[in-house]
Image (cartoon, rainbow, N blue to C red):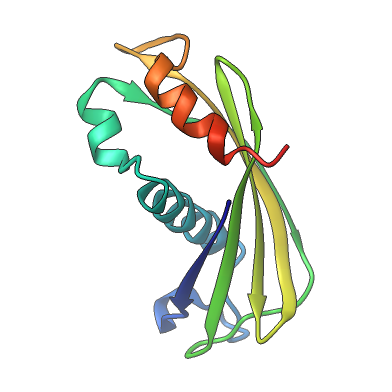
Length: 132
């Protein structure tokens, strides 16, 4: 499964050069990841209500072209890796078919405040979405 999340660039997200600041892309990826899980039937607030969290432990981004205030960007998100203890998401940020950035986030599972295994029902739901 791949989810598509549209984000309109706000003025506050741009730097002095008028382009989206590199730090904002982490926020875009988070919004897209939450959207991915929602569309997959795993709303993150419901997952967290069970005491299950997936903190980001690794983040990588490669920038290809700038995004600017007022533009709409599309974030393509897919679950690229899944084990009993962690998740790997891959992203492509595009504007009108032009690749602006690509990256990944890796997440470890925490249950009850400690590193743990992904609960079986969540793991099974994610395994259906895993594209490898």
